[in-house]
Structure formats: structure tokens, C-alpha cells
Image (cartoon, rainbow over all chains, first blue to last red; front, side, top):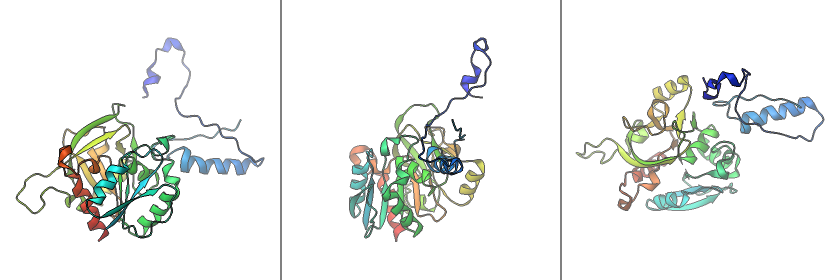
Length: 59
Length: 224
């Protein structure tokens, strides 16, 4: 269990996670292409899949 | 033998590595933008903070032109030694198994440690090999913030079975929480070696130990 999940519960009981947030702006309108590029970027550089999980969200 | 010592922006141990190599042969720096390793017979990837270690230690260096050339050099059987940040770079480049995590106590550490040579490569670095000496460890310094070796149990089992664990910290001396006390590993071919401790800082009696030179001598045997 992560230390921050053992916080005092009178501060509320919401799911939370601590990690790295990377904003990426891409010069493409092709959503599938952008997601494929991002996936590759995450696997090869932005995260080390051996020790880190990643999740891609589009805004 | 001709050695090449990589230098990234943010490297800081390349001069000591160059000095260690020059005790055994010719040595030159290889700037991170270079791709041509022709004439070089062994590569050292030194310690430091390549590209500032932004993102993760060693993550960006992996994509440098020089590392592309090193990957080809290693694939052809060329001897490659990664020290500290160099070890992190080799793990990020997938030339070595595992990863280096933040030290267990989350602090940068700097101290002298004893290492137990484990595999065939490391056995060549045992002090006074062949003499009557009973000393079975080598003494070299560590200095790092992200030196906790980690790999899944299945990988640890495989590298132990395959003779890829090069060095372990002596009992009670694991400084960073490394899995199974692993201080250094090699690839399956045995020509790529990475370790967190710094043999290049232990090549002169002035600094208290010359055991580190044996690591460089053993690299020559890999090249032979």
C-alpha cells in the first residue's frame, strides 16, 4: 500500500494516484494515428514498462 | 587495446574512466553525437547524469547517436562496460535486463563497498587470483541516488541460472535495497556488463583501492 493512501480519512475518501503527467500536443487530426504514436512514445521513452504503468487520455 | 569512453551532456565520470582505460591501452572520448566507433575495441559508458537524467536515469541517452552505434557494437560481440549511469543507460536500452530504482531509503549515497564476484567475468577480477591471497571480494566505491537493482523474480531467476549476475554486494553491505544483493549484471552473451559501483574510481593507491583496475583488465579478456 502506498503511504499516501494511509492519509487521515477525515480528509475525504476519494481515489487518488501520484505519478507523472506528460502533456503532448500532436500535429495531426488523425486520432488513431495520434494514439498509435503516443503508445509507441510511452513504451519507448515516456515510461519504462518494466517498472512503470501508463495510461493515455485524450482531452 | 583501444578504448572508447562515451560522453553525454551531464556525464561526470568520463575523465576517471579515460584514466583507468589509459593505464591499459589507448583511450579516447566518444561524444554523444558520434556514430563512428571504428578502431575502438572496448566501450565504457561512464557515470553521471546523462542529459540531466530527466524523465528517468538513462532514458534519454539511450536514443543518442553514440548509443545506436554501441548497440550495433554490442550485437557484434564487442565488449561494453556500463558504470552507474552507464548501467542505467544499458538497462533502458534493453542491452541488459532489469532496471535501477530510487534507493530504498530515498537518499543519495556515497561509500566504499565490498563486492563478491559471481560469474565467469567477475571471477577474473578476484584479487590476487592464482596467488595465496584469501581475499574474495573487491573494494570499490558506490555513489548514486537510483541504484536499487530490480527485475521481476522470473528474470532474476533466469539471470542467476544463466550466470549473468556479475557481482553481489557483500553480506550486510547492500547499500540501496537491490534485489538479491545484485550490484552488477551481464547480458546473455557475456560481452555487455553493467554495475552500479565505480571501478574507475579505484585504480590508484591514492584512493585506497586498486581493485577497480581488475574490472578493466577483465574487459580486455572479453575483447580477446
